[in-house]
Image 1 (cartoon, helix red, strand yellow):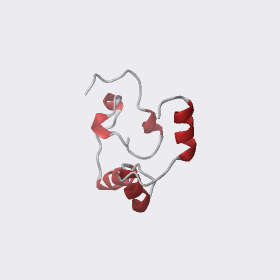
Image 2 (cartoon, one colour):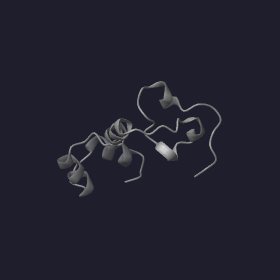
Image 3 (cartoon, helix red, strand yellow):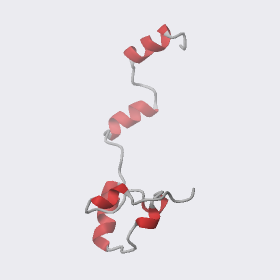
Length: 79
């Protein structure tokens, strides 16, 4: 992990633990208190993908078309 940054973690302003945990670049400013309640909150917050599983699977398999993006790429000569 790179060296910690100076200052306080911006997530400490909230009543929930930092979603980055020990990988946070401001980890030096974290409180060392770890309760079972905060662990449950952290597990809920660590989920970042807001897409449902059906959409995720379609994206993984390249089954979703993006006609506007494809048009822009074609106009730029990148496709």
